[in-house]
Each structure stands twice: as C-alpha cells, then as structure tokens.
Picture 1: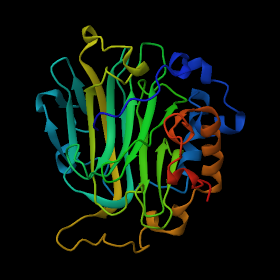
Picture 2 (picture 1 turned 30 degrees about the vertical axis):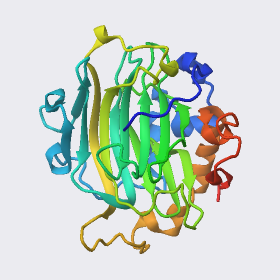
Picture 3 (picture 1 turned 60 degrees about the horizontal axis):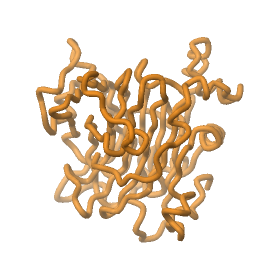
Picture 4 (picture 1 turned 180 degrees about the horizontal axis):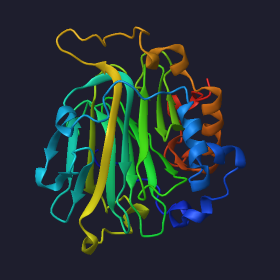
Length: 327
C-alpha cells in the first residue's frame, strides 16, 4: 500500500480500551463474539455463510503463490513453511505480491498483527494493478493502523480508480487482532466490492452499472501485503511516533485463498463477466439477509470514519455515496 492522504485525526475510538466494545447485542454475539465460550457457535455460523472460501490450496508454499517485493532478509517462514512473517525495523520493512493477477473473485488470507506497542506501524493487505504508486492505478486496500499498548487497532479501507482514492473508512474491531489469526477477505465483482473480517461484511462499495470514475472493474490486480513505517499519519494523525526500541515489528500470514479469474495475456478470459463462478452470480451481487444483520451492527457500533459523511472534506458528496449498500 502507498501513503494515504491524512484526514481527521484524534478519533475518540483510538483512546478506548477493548472493553469498551464488549457490550455486543446477544444476537450479534453469537455471530462475532470473541468470547471463548462462544467460539464454537461463531465457527458454526461462519461455516453457514453464503460466502465460501474455495479454490486455492491453503497449504501451498509461499513460493508457489508469491514473490518478495523488497528486503528478503526481513521475510521468514515457520519450519513447515505454512506461516509467513514480515518484519519492520528502523532500516526497512518488507512486502510480497502474488505471481498472478486477477480480475474479479474472492481473495482471503489469515493475518496476525503486530502485538504490543505498534504505534506508527502499518500492515497493508491490498490489491493493486501495479507494484508502485502509479498515477493511473486501481487499488482496493485493507490497512491495519497500529496503536499504543492497550488501545484498539484501527482498520482503514480505501478504494482507488485511475489513481484517485480518498474513499477511506475506518473501523475498530470486536477482538484483539494481535492475539491470534483472523481472516480478512475481499469479494470483487462488477456489482460490488465487499470487505470481510472473519466473514462478517464490514464495508460494501457498490457499482452503479454505468461507466464511472469510482468503481475499479476494468483492470486486473495483483494481491500484495507489506509492513512499513507511517508514523507521519497512521496513529492519531501522526501524533504518536514509532518506538524503535520495540523493533522488530512482525506481522504474520497464513492460508492464502483465491477463487478468481486469473488474467492471462494476450487473450484473458476475464474481459467480461460470465456468471459461471459463484462470486459472479446473483447471490454475490448483494448481501444475504444474515450478512445484512451483521453489516447493520457493524455500521452502528464499529465505524469511526466514513468519507461519505465528511462534509468538511467533501462539501459535495462523491457520486458513489448515493448508492445503497443494502440493494
């Protein structure tokens, strides 16, 4: 991911302890509660979601799917090669990208984020049309913004089309993402982009079915992840700086899953949608009823910034802000 444009800083949620988010309604708790007593219930409900992980072998080695982008000496794996670690120190971070590029599909990976004092550190998990901040790039981002010990991580999502972003949303999570692995996924088709956390839809970005300047749907993308220092903006708008005495900062990954249309030049099969795949059929064009219940709870309780509601930044709202995520 590339440097985001800073916007409002000092969000109140950045100063709230995890216990502040413990008052989860019983109905939602059965879906997403981090409490150990409900783990089995949550697992059973997650397994019943209409969105399914499939296709790519989650046990495939790192080398089969990815290339290191930079600082190979900051990349390590577990003994069996199934868990991958990226580290950041004062000298540099590290990143990787898929060998293949895709247009539309389901993209998923399990991450465990930097624990302890991670202020200023950004772990990025994103899709992009190129390796670089090109002026015409399309991009779909998860960014995990570190914080001081005891404060909740923030997730920032953003979407670029033809080099233009500025479509940030920020959420807090209902669990500590540093304690164990959690699944972060993107569903991308010509109708919508949906960001999922443990199969809970946290953001829905709709297309209007017309040629426009906001929905990326024409260019294939690689999938990337990286860890880097962004203490000029990431934590409380840059007020909290990276404590390099705590380095190295390490993020961990496993079980990459992709069920998508792989782009193959010069005659790719992804030029137009075919509805042959589950992620490009009617059910994947909209949230299911159960997903809407989860999504509504997320909107009420976990959203701390939405560019579509930032009248100071956008006196005239962007066109896509009029599209309903419920349709």
